[in-house]
Image (tube, rainbow over all chains, first blue to last red):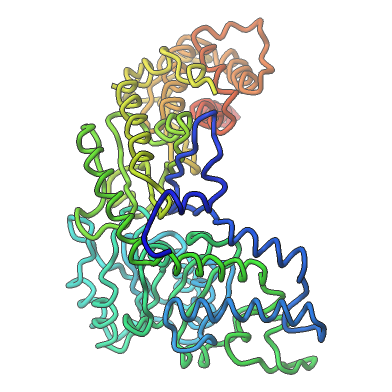
Length: 408
Length: 144
């Protein structure tokens, strides 16, 4: 694909031509999960039809084919994010498992009583609860980087927190799943590294939407999920620098991750296999590889520009509508718009939008501390991706106009 | 999908102009309820005289279905005995499954029948009623 053509892209996604409640589907819940292009669906089908066999085990053709597909997917992911070697990519169930893996395998070894783990107030529960569990079990403390009034990250607050000698890790969302903030991660990492503190990035809402280069940003850990970037559910990655992976203890124990097993002791394989116990989701990993091929062919810069334009258009239309409160920063926003309209409750807004075929998310978005910070109990959230159009935004805004009248 | 069944005029009216909203100065029982799935909350303040419910008020935050259901509930139960209210609670729960006793006069509450066609919203309509049930259990416990 040489130039970005949204109508051509839409034809690759079979679900986009379906109807809900007899209305054309307007899918604006992409921050929750994204739809899948034919290439992803077909390659997974193809493997299940013709090549299925467990990876890294059988000395037979099908197993070799599966293993090759699985390892190629690892190489595709490594290249996509510019990791220095494919062995730094560990396949997991998704972002949540990746972060839990770090909390267990790295955290329990390197964080001890009295140490500090630095997070922010805008974290998704998946980058908060694993650290609460770790802190409780080892006696560490959680501290939170403050947010400025406009919801951007307060870097002065970060500088103060990392200057504490007890601080051992910064774990931060790259982009907020509620506000759409894209955090200045390069600066965050520079500031943290100046105090020799490693940084984990929750990349679930960033990886799908713009180019990310691990070598350039120099993050230590990075987690994301395939299903938020056109791939299947049940697969995601943890990236970590090789020296960290080598120093870490295993996460789950079982087959695949061992070298030799005795009754009382075992030795483990080198990364990434040390962290991939049991049969991995290899068909899903192969689907993830196809999703990455698709994103690369369209171009991450084009995807980013398309979403930024849609976001800008939608914010303009919402402003025209009036009586809409939009949360989040005015600049540097990903394709996520969290809002409340008049007196209407988000739960009602989502139900009424659904009747017009428009899918959005309503609720606390797994970020209750952030809801408290915003002093709201919940919001409605529209989130865009490469296949959304301005005319879909129009359907969304027209439907909101009716809702506004109804609750006026 | 017929959303008119869900968003009846009476429901929207109770949402926009909730009845008995506020707090009682010295309630016999005060009880908090919440729905962790959607974050809806309610606090019921109930005053009783013997077996009779003499006054009731509520505070809370939530969607039109949960808040309207609570508002209508407070109007309906004022002046009833606690045993009458218990029957009403069970009949409202049955109504959400389409299994209500037609002999019991539900009055205005019947407009909430439409909710049963939207399974995801039934828990919204039940929030106030579940909280009421727990409030009455607190009263019963005191008698022992």
